Amino acid sequence: MATLNFHHLRYFWAVAHEGNLTRAAERLNLSQSAVSIQIRKLEDELGHALFERRGRQLVPTEAGRIALDHADAIFAAGDELLDTLAESGRGRRVLRVGALATLSRNFQIAFLRPLLGRDDVEIVLRSGGLGDLLASLEAHRLDVVLANATPPGDAATPWRAQPIAEQPVSLIGTPRRLGEDRSLEVLLQREPLVLPTAQSGIRTGFDALADRLGIRPRIAAEVDDMALLRLLAREDIGLAVVPPIVVRDELASGRLREAVQLPRLSETFFAVTLRRRFPNPLLRELLGAAAAEQG
Image (cartoon, rainbow, N blue to C red; front, side, top):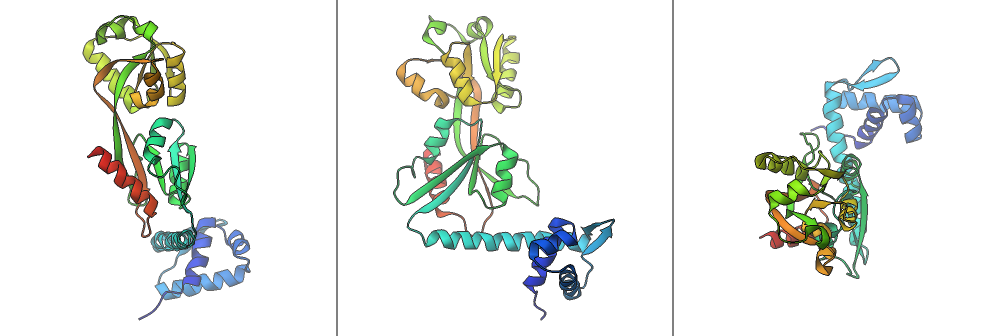
């Protein structure tokens, strides 16, 4: 039975990602002719042409696209194995976590708490936009991405989005603004509101609630950052529509009060991962703790 030459596959993989033989040869520190010869040998092994030329670009054929999908998986698995074995030989293990920049810091700390303060664990926490975080996850620079929505996926990027927490959403404000007890309808009609932006799942649910109640709320501010929403509530700009975990410290101190929990409105938090042959055992520990908390 014929065996695959992985050196030939590596050269093909480099050219396919560069789209240009010259750049790939420079990256591999080889001559163009040497790279061309190795790719022709791979085509002979597979029995299919892998590239077609379009101007100065080399574009994978249908067989080339199939080969590239497999090459991506093969070399990603190799990088993952090296990283995993390198970490296993160290006294301290590392967990690399990405989180949406707009995500509640209190939630992030609550999720990571089982590992915080352990002498044998180092946590690397990065924040950013969902697209950049998912790219880092796919490139094995992150072990998990924390988000409040499931990412779009397809067969080429099989994300796993595991629900790890569901938080109720409440109407929260300063004691001065809340004053005496008033119904939800009265508060929504009379007080200015600080709301998440229209792209948020919370906002979609809140708008549906306002429609059901026949109320047109007065909006003081719309923000996509939970940390900023927390500050605006503290500054008494208006009543905030927010999960109580976001303002947990202010509620405990009495600086803010929870007026009412909004019916049928909650925020779900997800741990987004990729299927991996060598998953980080620290992540498995965190996901197990989150599942036990939910259960």
